[in-house]
Image (cartoon, rainbow, N blue to C red; front, top):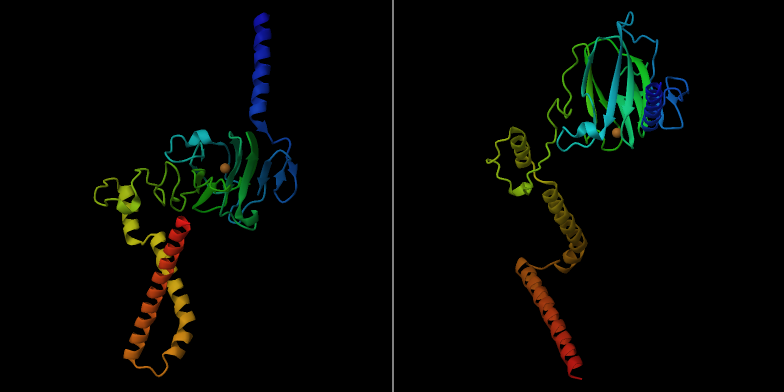
Length: 291
Ligand SMILES: [Cu+2]
């Protein structure tokens, strides 16, 4: 009897703890129409479609359910990444009715957003689940026909770049998307060697990814070089434009030799003026000290 009591109590306790940790939004969502469901607690579903067949689907081919976990802890196995889904790649039959249970395990906002769906069925071609803070939200859509790879990601600033990115293939898919953690190569490979990029020895690297990155660096001038050159050019052009009318007036009717002489005189005068100025300042400073 006591054992039963303790079992019951611990079950109750653990379910309370679980409820506090992961908030289930599914029963709190309000249907706003057009497949848009939302509650005040940060749970949201957009592009929900329970029964409208996409063009080209005669019937629902099969019904599937997946649970997607999102959180910082799933990124730990991907060096340099901050957020991730627990699974990066899915594949389904065309015209599958898919229910996604999305569980956010972080104390920030995360999304599971799918792109490239038919716009006549899904607003902006998106199906989108969102939870703020630890919580769960579920949504359903019907996948289109044909072979296509769809991007799934979290659209919050920098979350995709930090690893929260995956792909969902319908049928055979249409190839692989870049920068899917653990699936495909990064588009821009970060370099953690600590070396200053400009001084990198391009031949020393045996790692193919960093060699590729090095080649890319070699081919393109760096941004700082570009801006320096254009900066000098802009200043030069501005000075030239300002001085051109003045000089043109001054040099009118002069021969080349006269112009050169004039410019030399100008420089000499300027230098003399600066020397005089410095002398005056030194004199002032020393007389100040003496008195
Ligand atoms: Cu996120």
